[in-house]
Length: 418
Image 1 (tube, rainbow, N blue to C red):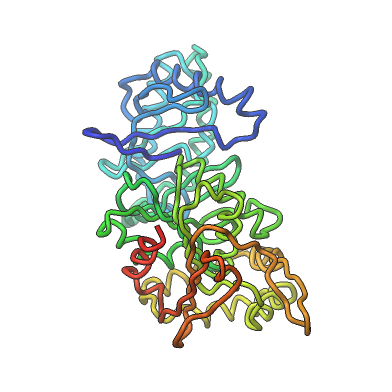
Image 2: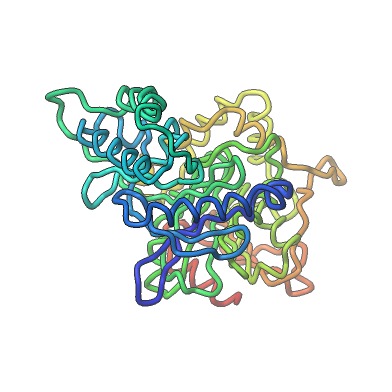
């Protein structure tokens, strides 16, 4: 689902099946789009259900945006009052009075806690069917699912009311993959900047730069790569090439025609692969702490630790967090690294391909893009580094001190490259 701004009106949601498999796009998606639109029209005006906005194309529909938080243990814990579930039962009663039965109540992600009133909203009517069953029958179908939701989320009598966590990250589903991202700045920016983080980190590391985007009339998107941050581990191999394909699907799902790319470490290798394979979509590229040719000893050590002792690598990542991040960022990144599955750390570094050079040296096998791009070193030093591509004018290398803490310089560099 995509949140789309509307000129002169409230934003709306686009539910798009374009990222699904070819079989789903050809056979299932057109039916689901038409069916859900028909169900939404049938219950138009019912409180707690979004109003339809029309069909975008054969694979997408638009509907009213209801600001809220999907029911999750992490967000709500056992915090919702009894009245919330009574109101949810009232929505189901309204569906039944319109001759419909809802069959996916066991999925909490279809139920929102709305910010404005704290009332429930039911946002996925693809699982509703126009079956005018007797209410006694539908009550029996719903009772078991409602009892399980109450057991997971209802607040005990006399307990304090905790505030659900703020809805900061946006969420997108690419097939069965859950993709989370931060989206900041001017939505009308024709060429947004996409930020890809290093192994073990999340898009939280780019927050100051993303928050600075609006001041520069730019749009910045920080993506949690597969298996890291809040995104699910949806790939069996986390090679830069496969992850770049995943990122390309994300860019297509957001309907971004062109982007500027910023990649850190392993995320820089992913960005390079994407820039090579989709050169028409990438206007400029900045990589930070990403090897251009020869593999530094620190990276080889990390690759060995990832294969043999991923918990040792986890402790190293905790020790080597950038010094320029704030205390709040550091605390969040530490939690992210602690939550990262060991298999994600292992797969990411195991997916980097190396080529042996003369005298036992190694080179990263990731190709270099032809369009203008900037390789940034975060260590202190003077002068510039030179690498493959300098002769053709396609590569400029610089040294910055703590570039992640210097949001202005990131945007300045992108403007120079563009």
